[in-house]
Length: 79
Image 1 (cartoon, rainbow, N blue to C red):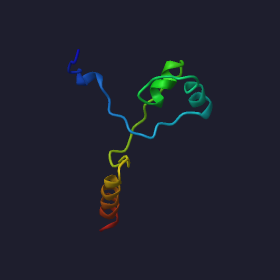
Image 2 (cartoon, one colour):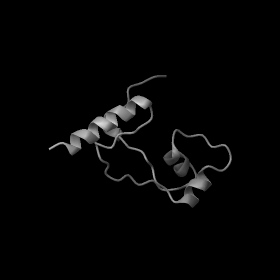
Image 3 (cartoon, helix red, strand yellow):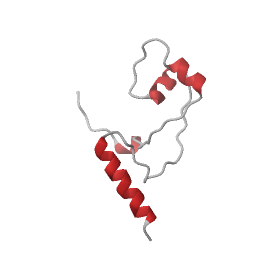
Image 4 (tube, rainbow, N blue to C red):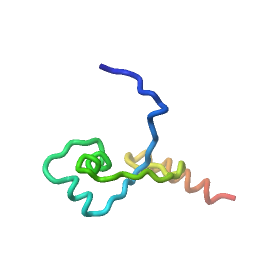
């Protein structure tokens, strides 16, 4: 079933996610399934804390993302 989620229950998050190496290694033991490292850590009983992010922090995944990042940096440097 597909449904629209209540946006009051959602939070936008950024990468990177940070964990102690021990917690991350324990979370990846076996063949766990999750959408990200936070889900894996929670699945093994770890605690995930959300901290404020930076809206200008853009994820670079595709080659075109580099152009967007470069443009943003150039705008920051110009007076």
